[in-house]
Image (cartoon, rainbow, N blue to C red; front, side):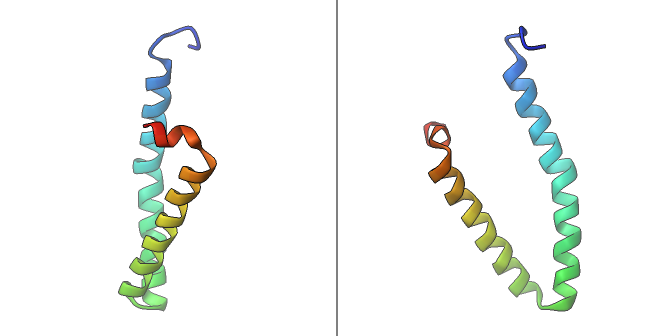
Length: 68
């Protein structure tokens, strides 16, 4: 598999599948539960801030991301 020139694309596809088919439903379940404890706008605001922090972290710690 490492000798296949399409290997990086396969890796990217597998990360995409895990993120959107596994991570999103779990994140939605957690966000829905937190919305019952607080309010939906508060949970959405916190989710947005967390995603912004993750994006900034990737831009600072992974210089290769800027080249994309």
